[in-house]
Amino acid sequence: MNIYQMLAYEGMRTFFGPWLTFAFRIHSEGADNIPTEGGALLICNHRSVLDPVALMTEIDRYIHFVGGSRGFVVPTVKTLYNMTGMMKLSMKGGPSTARGIEQTARLMKDGEIVGIFPEGIESFMRPDRASKISYFRTGFARLALEAGVPIIPAAVVATEEVKLPELPAKVLNRAIDHPAARGGSMRFVLYKRVVVRVGKPIDLGGFLEQPLTKTAIDTLSGKIRRIVIKLYNGEDLERFVEGKVPFDIFTDRV
Image (cartoon, rainbow, N blue to C red; front, side, top):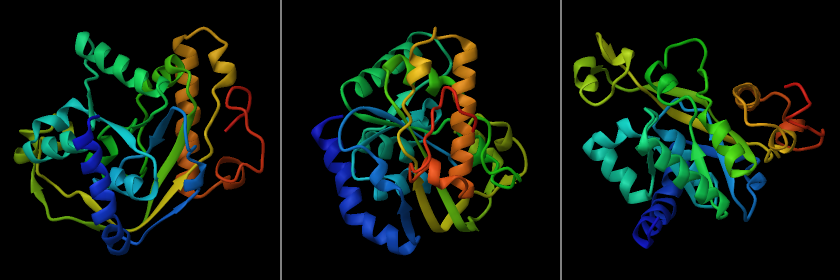
């Protein structure tokens, strides 16, 4: 992140934040759970283009969002990503993936907050599915364990949604490699009334003391996904938002 990216990020928050809050009726619960300093990995669901905007509006600290490499091939999106300092992370493996993971881990070790949407574009591309939170890719769990930082679960919850005009799938397919973009037409959703619900930072404790195995990564990823679903549904908030009920991610069930 350079000074120009920081200015663009803060400029969007300052000039567009109040308007976005009013237009989409954005408010937050648990935003004070974000620590004032120290590195962390922010994990959130992803159903609309408004998700990172809602998080930026309600969370005071700078979030280094990580975007899939697909988004950087769309001219307008690429410009916005680069302006605000979003990092590109390819999940295809190889040297570029290794460099992206190393850069992301270094940011968190240096005390920064990194934001990741583990669903990728799955729920974003299939907004009509009954389940509003799709499966999580597990790479974020490995990243948090390697960096040794807590995970902050969050959910962007739309109490009202509106569908945008249909877009021909053949147009989308030029920019997005996803099965949903290969037939007919698509309609994305936009939020009308939004709650940003932020949980307490989760100390990975016991997981950090264990070998970094696939089983440990899958277990941690599954538990975090279930916590995000609970935040989305407004369940168990005394435990995950208010912190009134003790919780150990390593030993407790979700």
